[in-house]
Length: 114
Image (cartoon, rainbow, N blue to C red; front, side, top):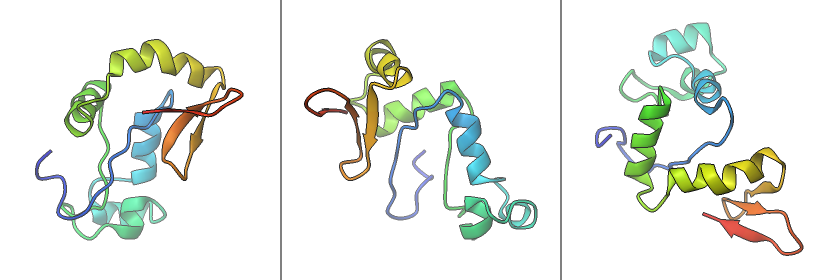
């Protein structure tokens, strides 16, 4: 992970039933040449420079995602999120506030979740 970034970066935790496969599909193939030729509209196809400078990263499995989340977000408690927040997300009781970059619970008053 320490070699993942060669400049400024943003790290996100994606929450979706198929987040890993969906994100990997949006990223496109790891090899930029292949991405440009096979999936030119993918992130790597459009913006990748070389195989080591391919603009984006995504975990390849739930285990990798857990390790990488713990590395980038040490304060995040994945188990607690699955117990308390994930059921709310599934039931439509939460929405993403893009301006604040956080999920919020839908209530009379907006409550941020980190």
